[in-house]
Length: 191
Image 1 (tube, one colour):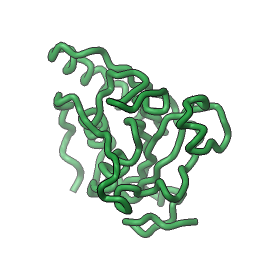
Image 2 (cartoon, helix red, strand yellow):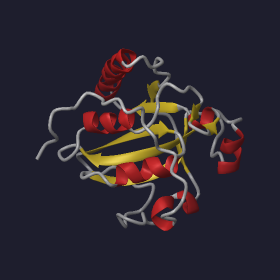
Image 3 (cartoon, helix red, strand yellow):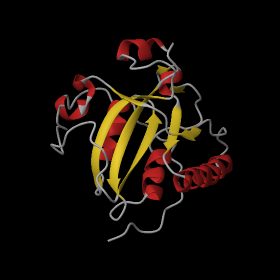
Image 4 (cartoon, one colour):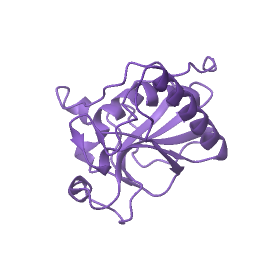
């Protein structure tokens, strides 16, 4: 297995004891992965595909939009250093969750806004944060959130060339763009 270009840990690693994982879809996964790998407390990031109905899809299959998968980032994090609520804040503020099957110029269900939860606590936190952020957007006259929140299903890693793409290609495409509306600020992360 290949190692992560920044953390030098094996991609596909299982979360160490005491660590948690999350999966987020926010459009093109390259910029999303960079957003999360820069956070203190994140132990590993990995781009891939989730939420579809084809086993082991390829990038080309997902890009055509006929597998039902979204481009996602799997994040393994130390919850004693960064909270799930903090990850949710980053999720809401760094893309437009009102666009349905697109993010900016990237159009198709593979670019939809998606949160996959691993525990009941994550699901509750994600649902509460969606309600809160939807209200914040409404106050600004913006559309309703279209983000899907679903239990985590299979995660299929993308090809090695797509892992940590913006570290290897610093001038590569990054489609991240938020709405400008601030999400609820979580309690300070543990020290």
